[in-house]
Image 1 (cartoon, rainbow, N blue to C red):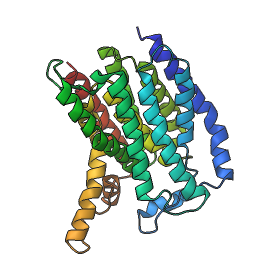
Image 2 (image 1 turned 30 degrees about the vertical axis):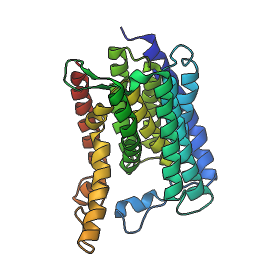
Image 3 (image 1 turned 30 degrees about the horizontal axis):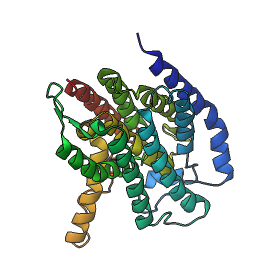
Image 4 (image 1 turned 90 degrees about the vertical axis):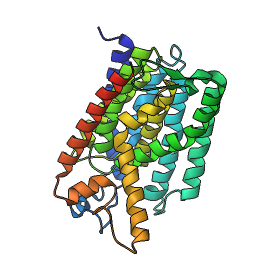
Length: 323
């Protein structure tokens, strides 16, 4: 029987997400916070120009409101929820500057990076003070062996910065097709819910709430999308994935269940590096890599389906790797 601490937040967050969408989407339309598409990008995406963005507010509100009913009994949710909100606020500021105030660059790269470093630092310091064991590392497929000790915790705290910030930006790069980041992260949220129950981590109400909020949002974000999550949503979801992994001593598992995120971010790095080294040649037809597949003839829905199914299979592998 499924625990009520999973079912209740799952359905509550789903209901809030579905109920909010018909109000927030028209509100965003009235604010004229529409998506802009590059003319040199995938041509089929030009028709998406004007679709409301900043829909990540729907996800954030659904998760936060739902979490308030459970956080008193599940205090280990606090640092993960902080990471979700912290990165969500950075994403919101970036979206607001770009689509409301019409500042094309949004937050400057240095501002965004500084914000991400500060949020990550607060998260790591909180874990170090409140629950140092969270900085230990469970080794996948080891029969439950955990790397522990002061030096492991110190190394884990240091590695947390590139791991968390990299994951956050990986989710951000993944958010380029209707339902892609939503579908992939829903699979990740299901994995973390199962992992939390299996390991007794005590954050399953939050992971279930994220699952419910994403499923509700997906009803409006699936192709053809009526709303996009924007950086508000993608950065918040990146914070969720990284935060949940660290809260359960599973940072290594990000490389398994979050492989799509890392493939996306490395495809951009490869493209930029190759472009500079070869004087303008491209390694991929377009980066991030989901656009490469589109330009190879794949439909948008096919890319989303394949990436989501791959993540689902990787999550099954991750669950096996817990033992």
